[in-house]
Length: 79
Image 1 (cartoon, helix red, strand yellow):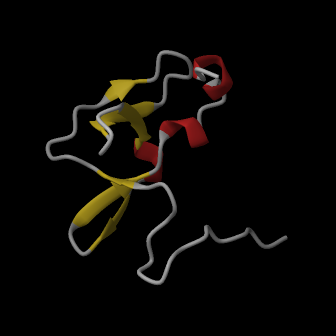
Image 2 (tube, rainbow, N blue to C red; image 1 turned 30 degrees about the vertical axis):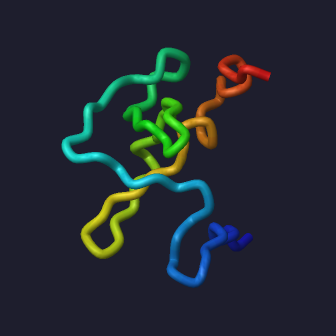
């Protein structure tokens, strides 16, 4: 079976991706142990980014939130 491609906008960007800072401070997820880093969103909130989802376009590295691929994400939800 063919795997579905991630949705992209006209510029090739994935929804909900964030630019990685330089240098990246790598930490381990306290739940699953995956490699991730933290960034601050435009709203001033901390967001964990999964280093397993890093893509580079035009010299800028982007990653998706770790909540997307963490098996324990529901445990950390504030809802």
